Image: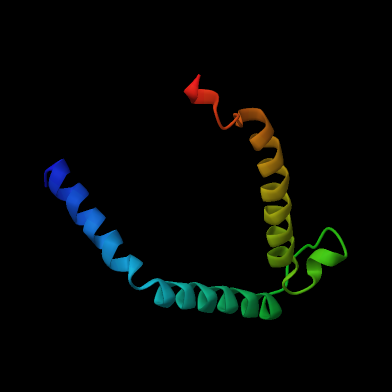
Length: 90
C-alpha cells in the first residue's frame, strides 16, 4: 500500500470516528469502570504504604497527579514560551 493511500484511509477513518465521539466516550468510561471494579476484587500483593491497599487509590492518585501537572506546567510553559500579542508584527 502506498503512503498516500494509507494516509488518506487513516484520515478518513479518523473523520468517521469523530462523528462517533459519544460512543467512544461511553466505551472509555465503561473500560475505566471495569478496571475500577477490578481493583475491588484484586488486591495488591505487597502494598508499601497504607493507602495503596485501598480500592481505586491508584486511579485517584493518577488523576490528581495529572491535574496538578497540567496546571503547573501550563503556568510554567506559558511564561517560558509565551510572546506578546504584537511579537510578530514588529
